[in-house]
Image (cartoon, rainbow, N blue to C red; front, side):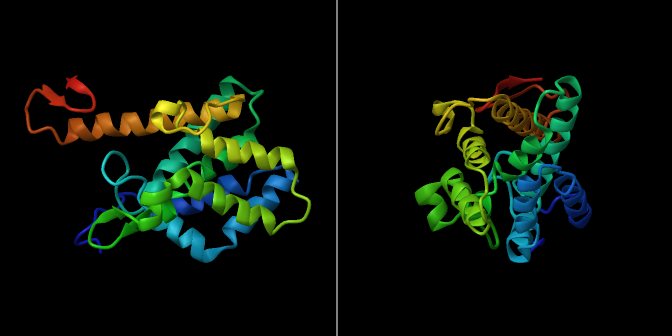
Length: 212
């Protein structure tokens, strides 16, 4: 497949090992129990490792979703150093889950394209469905945590005009939105600069306008 589709230039197995280490550092017993249900689902996690994060704009390659997700978790750790009142466990698991619906949204063959269900639903409701299935495998998972995780998924685009179902309503949800936006935008700026066919990088891009 790598003859047709770009693959992450980082070692995917190493990225996944780092992701698991972060996830298993969660201390809240309920969130850790839920986390383990995901990690133990080898089929789901193999799809997660190989999924792109987008069709075109950012991390649009095999392993892109994994790389993007780990970036957000690492950025979140830096943010927590500045704002220690943020719930680290909720930040880590919420970051992992925010785009998980993309494993259903995209099909990777000789190109990246949206699946039929991806076209009809999009990755936000698909991600919520995946989360609910895993929560239903557990006994007595707290409703408050369930609704917070669902809200992180529904609000991670930040504003309704950007595709959010709800705008962020608590600090961790707001943090994940801004970190997601930061990582995706900086990725695009760097990618455009590296691939600019000019010596001085004066280019115009339809999404960003004039760039230097």
